[in-house]
Image (cartoon, rainbow, N blue to C red; front, side, top):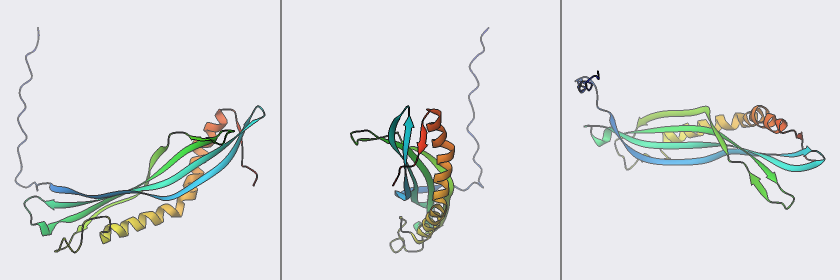
Length: 179
């Protein structure tokens, strides 16, 4: 015996105490490299040597949006920002001909970031909700300073945990090139 179709669901009842969600107007976005490093290596296996380079960078994704609560005056607008930092790595190899080939970059989001919002002000023309909105710019500067402060430690840790084991597992010996 087959069961009949499930009963139709009833729409949720709206509560008079729930404020409407603000409407968001896309502001501006940018991606910027904050710090980068290339670590040169010589890989040897069975008397053959190959030049390699580990490329690291930390980049920042920066978004600023304008939010106006529905039914509110345009002067009630807020600028919201979201900053996220990412560590990106790739391994590059140099052939005897001098050609350089790199693995696809791998990116991981770092815990360094910030999200916030501030009133845009009474005159939207005087205080544009863009990448240069003062509170968002100050947040960006804080995140950049934090990223720069520990970038080399992050690069070293990523090399030790992700790259070196992968290279050693392939049977190569790793050395730094002679200057």
